[in-house]
Every structure is written in C-alpha cells, then in structure tokens.
Amino acid sequence: MYVNSFEGLHVYNLPNINGESVGLLNFLTEVYAIREDNNIVNINGVDGRWVYINIEGIEGWVFNDYLDDEWQYKKRMNEIIEEKIIGEWQIIESTAYLSPPLEVHPWIFIFHRNGRIIYGPAASGYGFFGTWEVNNGMIEVSGDITMDSAGVLSGNESHNLNDIRFIDNDTVTFYNGISDSFDRMKRGIDY
Image (cartoon, helix red, strand yellow):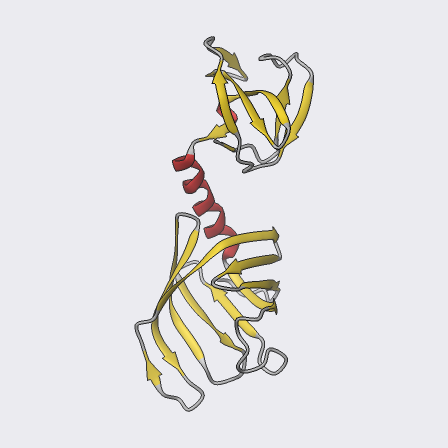
C-alpha cells in the first residue's frame, strides 16, 4: 500500500485518532499492511478500517482511507508526473549525453501539455521531435523526426524515461540507462 495524503500520514500506537502518534509517513511512502481491524469506523465522514503497518522501523495503526493499493498508486503517479513534467528542462548533470559535450550544447527537454516533446542539445542543429505519455510511472517517448547536424531526417524512434524522481518542482532526475538530472527553465512560455 502507498500513502495518498499530501500532508503525510500519522501512525498511531492504537487504532484510534486519540492514540499517540508514533511517526509521520511522507506522501507516496510504501507501507506493508500486517493486519486490519475488523471494526468499520467513520473519520471525517469517511467509513474505513484501521490497518496495522510496518515501514522502516515504524509500526502502528493508520486509517485505510489514506492508503492506495498498487493500481491506485500507479494511476496517481501517472497524474502527478503528467502535471509536473510540463515545461522546459535543461540538463545539469549527466554522463549519458557526451557528444556533443554538455558545456558546448546543454541538453534541453520540452514537454508540451498536448503530448508533444522536443529535445536534444541546444543550438546544435540536432533534435528529436515526437510524442510522450505516462504509463505505469514511466514516460514513454515515440519519435516522429530526428534531424542531425547536417539536416538529415530520420524517424520512428522510441524509448522510455523511467525512475522519475522530482527532487522538488524545479529539479527532476530520469533514469534511462544512466541517471540524468534536469532543472526547470523559467521562460514563461505557455506549454
């Protein structure tokens, strides 16, 4: 199960909101349900059960309305990635793109809300144009056209950007064979 509360989730020593808080779990923390209380209770107008969990040394009770199963988690992750990735990103750390060197042509990814993507080394004459979508927490990229520095066009490329981690709203790390970190570029363009 996964914590679905943006504010985090308190873990209690008893299956009761009047119990003592023994920890606070962050949004999207994976937890292991050990057992479920048989009683249905109503908290803030929602019926649910208390679940006894264990995660990284924190054991106790949480209300199950604040937990998602794997399917719900993947759906929520897709929605978060889709909303947060829109915009223009410039690479800040990479060993994946060594040619041309980063200091000469830093790589830029531009994710448009309509599902289009443009990326490649800035001002190099080389680029990738295609579409993107999020599936199971992974960005799937399919290419329409690639243009090399000599202006030669080719097409039909596809690959995935996975293990997407938003460090904050302005920094993201992808893993596509090698970890690449990007900072959001603030240009005020409507994507």
